[in-house]
Length: 172
Image (spheres, rainbow, N blue to C red):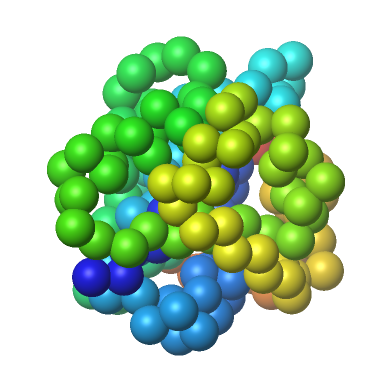
């Protein structure tokens, strides 16, 4: 089985993430994809996620609930420590030893990928795939817009935006 591993802070998950994942699923004929929110990225220790882990997981579930081949995996959040991809990859491969794994990354990760912990081992265990995020805005910029109470319906699914508004995330 071809399995995708799609990690990130997802603070918040936006249409760019959704489109990127759909493109990977089609291009790679993925039969299952694990979306894996990080507790905190080693590259973002000084600026951890704004939304709680529980809120980020809830938003991911809403964003991907209509995709039967997508499962939200909370292993990194459950560990409550810096999230290193190698730890997650080893754990998942141990559960599914006979499957093919693809690490799904945005093109913006290309220069950072060689800096990841155990980068060479990751490349031996999974096949990295890079794709272009077509949304012309980042999660950081979306958070700024939300903080200013500016319109974000073009960047977030209606369900995710409703959740953010209901729980007043990113407003302060």
